[in-house]
Length: 484
Image (tube, rainbow, N blue to C red; front, side, top):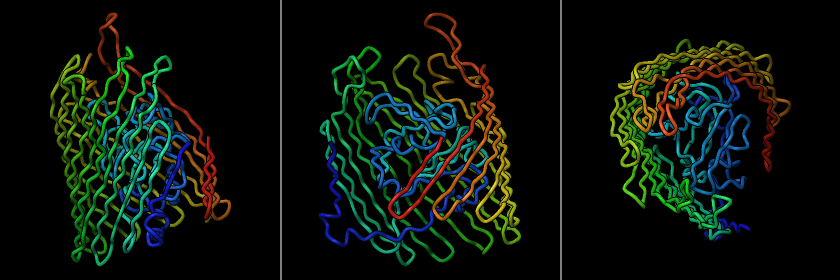
């Protein structure tokens, strides 16, 4: 049994006032705001209304009902959780917060179990490869988590939930936007005694997570400046292979400082510095794994011929991954340089998005990638699209330097093909279908050399074929998604 008490009821009528919601625009497909229904790709958006109306207690609960997405859990709240998109591996799903990847450098996947959806405005789901725009790891797809910023004027609210296993969930938020200035803050806390993660165990494993998101910005003529910080910190208890009770402290964060300038009606430039942390510290030993990644990105959006858009970008990054204790400790620093270009051609019923990217990784070598997305509007209600794209994933630090590590590993590669259709039956009713194929090469697998020994090697290949069918309904009081 769970009791939910909206904090707005305690704060009075003013807290019940919500900012007007607009049709959601997405950035994951193109790198700039665009209508998702016009994209020549498989995209879904989980809106703020859907998040609030759901009974989801974490991000995985929201994603697991989406077509083509699968969730693997190792227990209750806070336990290791994996995301799989269209049959690919968990480290082939790129997870971002406000356009910044938050993957761990040690294992290659993101700690989605610590992300509280109450701090999110929407979730953009891009199914299919997108390495040309977002880099390493986007083989199966991209999940872009957009944090809450609030609408015009002042807005605030909160909630309090009590449940079984001594579970408490509380959240509060406030924002103000006006006169070219913006401020927002949200905080949430979750604590539970949990339950035994193993069937033959009677030991409860608890979880504690305090998350917050802060953002501020202002406009000055053609210039805009923004500062943001998201963080999740806490403790999760678990059982090891032998059933021994253990616990660890975690810290995940994403910080950014950005400057945007609109020099002309046709040219907009962005410079952004970001820092990502993924830290785990064991409490029964001195073992720890820390990832720290700092990147500076320069991206230019140029309008051509009135309707076309050219995107040019460069990124320089420095990643530090340190593993203390365990079988094979390591401490590595890597420099990564990336450059990309994308042209979005819009000719009435026809739309073509072509992109290319080049990555130079200090340890894993260089890798080019490219993509083509074509869309055709048959009518106001029906759109067809087709795409072909390559993608890659740089080997993780564990794969290169951990137990059985191989520093000579090459990036995993893929080539993907897709045909799709989107049809609006009536306002609020949409049907969609996608037929796809993904060919993967240089997949990293464990090659045993003895009972307890082995090493990682690029040996595997795979082909994934799939068909997705979806029906979506969006109404004033009900949102419905059916898919398979």
